[in-house]
Image (cartoon, rainbow, N blue to C red; front, side):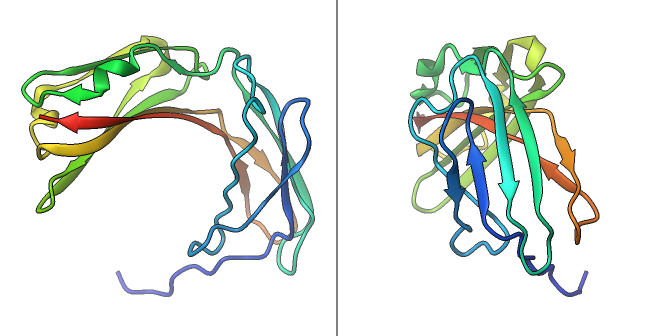
Length: 183
């Protein structure tokens, strides 16, 4: 459907403050206007989770705002990540986890490529299930070769208000990735 792509808007300087931590300025993502990314120092988010505060100073199009994202206690932990080092396409891949935000979902993602072809998949399961098996018919679509497997969980979404926005939404995510060889 043709149309005008959305334009990013200026929220001013963005900062994130982890539990008991020092504020970190979040730079705008290179090549992704309107997207912001930050890596926090190791240990910034304890395994017991906690409140992470986001603040925008306000810019030319968006007023000042703040939001708090609550990470669960305990955070998502992929308890058998070693099984994803070598994946056999004709067998299922069972992942197990503990923790995660109640009432949300765990995303199991994988990919591989062999120079001529590449593929990826995403499966979801309720966090309370604590286990999920990627079925062989999904894995069969991956070409043999190097790739990765990721297990992730998003926090519950929280909304915030700011002049210039119809709605503001903030959330956090925990991602655990391993290099995978698909056979």
